[in-house]
Length: 84
Image 1 (cartoon, rainbow, N blue to C red):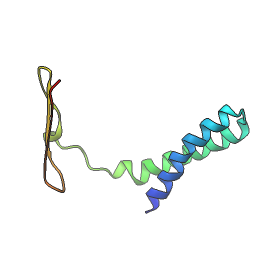
Image 2: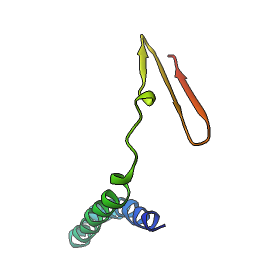
Image 3: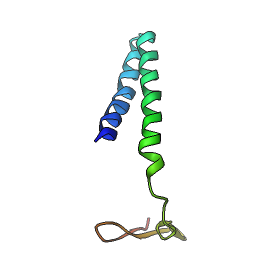
Image 4: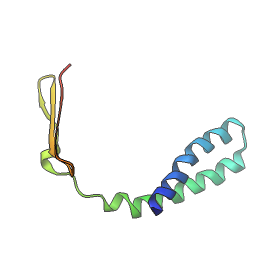
């Protein structure tokens, strides 16, 4: 639940930062950038570093112009085929 709150603040900072830059409110943009950096560090430590490593069977296999990706999920078997 904590990561959801931090992620919401993190995502909101991107929108607010753009608005402050358009409005040329550079002091508020700097404060928002600081909050963005702090939330990035928090999310890196509490969320990203704890993600499981990718499994080798979930790597895409290239066959010409066809991409096949198969793997297991918590729900069941997943198979994605993209052929242009």
